[in-house]
Image (cartoon, rainbow, N blue to C red):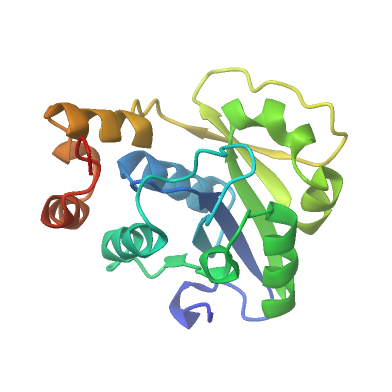
Length: 206
């Protein structure tokens, strides 16, 4: 996958953020996080990488890979600094971050890689498969709420902190609201809301 030339500050070196997750569904909070990382860490681009299966979430995504990919592509359609990578969906099976970062490094040897993650996930980082290598391949960008203290990690690695405003949105809450017939549409991009309604995603019994 190529980086759009229009978003690269330095043609000899660019800063690429990797944002992995289920994106089940992708929502406005995901984009607030990506935007804060783009601005504060001076990234040239962010790749959103939907997981096939996450090792720490064995129950798996509710929507299929093709549905989650379609929603992501609709959500970023007018944003060249954001791209979707299908590397984990194409590989299938459990998605280990270290394997993904190794593959991206091979694809983009000139890129300086950064890995986006919420501060609430930092405690789980030592449990990740080959966690030390993950942090060698990409600098973790630890995103926390503005003014909140970011928890420490037992891993002695370089990390950068990014602040984002409180955004009380989660994919699980959206799924629960859809199943219960509550309002949820404003939590996602209009094109994503239309897609969810068209394909009857996340409804009770679907």
